[in-house]
Each structure stands twice: as C-alpha cells, then as structure tokens.
Length: 165
Image (cartoon, rainbow, N blue to C red; front, top):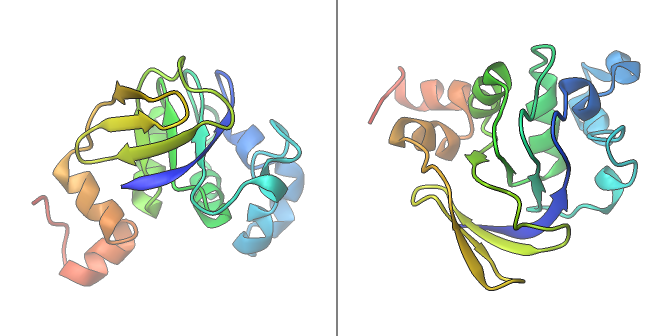
C-alpha cells in the first residue's frame, strides 16, 4: 500500500516539463537533476513535495522525447507513484523499467493536497480526504514483480533472467 499527498497537474505533461532541457548538463548527476523535477510545470513542486507523495495528472502524461531521466528523477525525488488518465507508451515502459509505479485511472475527483492510499495489485485508490474509493487498472503481476524488485535491472540481477510470474 502506498500512502501520500497529491500534487495535481493537467494534461500533456511532457518529458520536457518533467526534466527541463536547460539542466541537460546534470544528466550524470541524477540526484541533483531530481531537485528540478517538474519545475517548469510547478516551480515549487520539488522543494515542497514530501517522500511518498503522488503526482496526479490528466491525459498523456510523459509525452515527448524518450528521456529515461524523466521517470528516474520523479522516482529519485521521492514520488511513490504517478496517477494519470493515460500515459505516453515510451514513458510508461521507461517508468516500469526504473521502478516507478504508474496507475491509470480517472483522476477528475482527485484534487491537489488530497491524501491517498493506493493499492497497485488490487487497483484501488482510497481518497482519505474525500472518503471515496476509485478503481484503477491493476498492474499485471510481471510489472509488480519488476517494481517490487526496484526496476528491471534489479529484477534481472535478482533472478538472473526476466521472470513473468
């Protein structure tokens, strides 16, 4: 079960908004780059979010260039999961590979500052602020295994191969 506070964003949050290009020189120093995560969408996000908080957005989160840095710095910043109506395909794959949980769900009823409990395996989101329960698409077991191991590289190192079950 993941628990945290919501940071709400809109539709079409691109990898450029997640990982601003002007910090390209920091790509070999990911902890420093993570201090600038989502800075162009909300300048205060990185400095005010807390470990375990959630990024919640609308449609097409992560569109744009295939920057593995984008999901990596979201994870390094301490975000426990990203909830959105939909994700760009390459962002989705990159996020799972680096161990960042993504949850596809209707985010219209979730607001900035709400407190959530998220059960990835069951696909259940409990908004403790509004006392409502939302359904999400549960993650397949193979993806849960990768996430539980900390990402695809850690999963392969642990199992010596890619395990689907």
